[in-house]
Length: 144
Image (cartoon, rainbow, N blue to C red; front, side, top):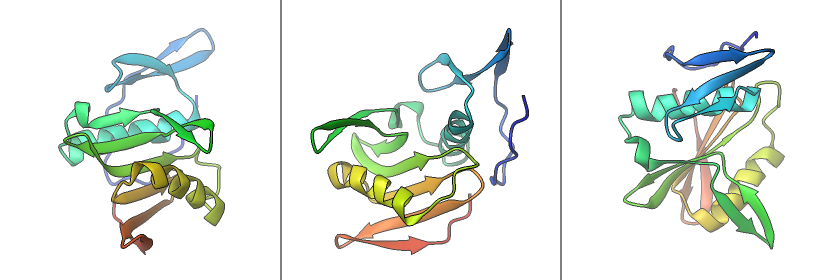
C-alpha cells in the first residue's frame, strides 16, 4: 500500500499490518486495529502529534465522537480535551480532498455545539488553523 508522505515535521512510528489485501493501523487511543483508509492515515498522524509532540494524555483525545446536529447524527474526527472541556477540534480529510470554505464550514458547524477554542482542518498535506475569538474565527498559519 502506497501511503502519502504527509506534511508533518516529525516521522511517527506507526504499527501497520496486512491481512490478505487489506491494511490496518493500530490506534493508540482505542487500542485496536483500524482499517487503514487515507482519512485514518491523517487522523493517526494527528493522534501521534498531540500525544508524542504536544504531550497530551491519550485519555484527552476523543475520536469519532457522535454529535447530534440539527437532528442528524454526525461524527467528529478528533477532539482534544482538557479536564473534559473541548480545546481543539480536528477535522480530517483524505490527502486527495481539497480543503475549501465548505469543508471548514462543516467543522465550524460541529464546533457550534462543542465550542472548542481551536479548529484544525487537515488533509495531511495542508492544515488550516483557526481560533474562536468572540464568536468569530481568526485564521493562523500553524507549524505541525
